[in-house]
Image (cartoon, rainbow, N blue to C red; front, side, top):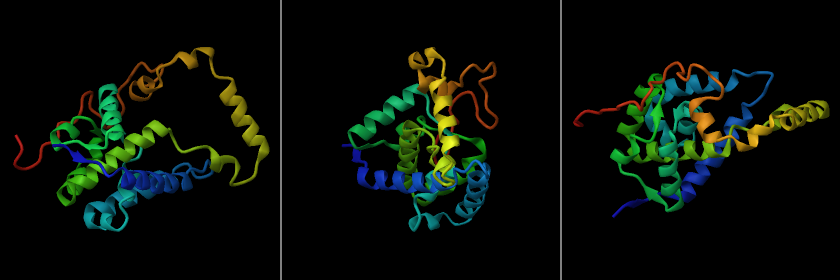
Length: 197
C-alpha cells in the first residue's frame, strides 16, 4: 500500500518557502536570492540536519533549479491530488536536478529521503503557482507608475499567448533555438546511490 503524503506539512512548507523567496524578489537586488541560496546550499551540504529545524530551506535552495517534464508534472499532480507519497524509484525519474546540486541532493537523501520527496513536491507546487509575484516591485516602494507599467506589459502580450502551452514553454523554453540550459542534461539525471544498481 502506498504511503501518504502529509499535504498539510507540504502546504506549510510551500507557504514558508514562497514567503522567503518573495522577500528576496526585489528588482533593486536581482541577485539577492541567488546569493542567499548559494550560501544556504553550502551550509546544508555541511549540515543537512539543519533541515530538521528549517525544512523550508531545501525548497528555497533548489527553487528554479529542478525541472519537471510534462509526464512528471502529470505524475506529481496525481500524487498530490491523492496524497500519495511516491516510492524512491518512482520519485527519482520525475525531477531533473541541476548537476551542481547533486551533492546536496545526495546529502539530503542520506539524512531524510522523505524530506527530499516533500521538498520536490513543494517545488512542483511552486512551479505550478508560478514565480514569485511582482509585489515587491511596487508595494515595497509604493510606486504606482511602475505598477501601471507592469500591467501594460502584461496586457500587451501577443494574442497567441492565450493558446500557448505554458507548461511546455517552461520546460522547453519559448522561442529558443538552443533548448539546453547550462548545468542540465537533455534527459533526467541518472542518480545512483551506494547499493543501487
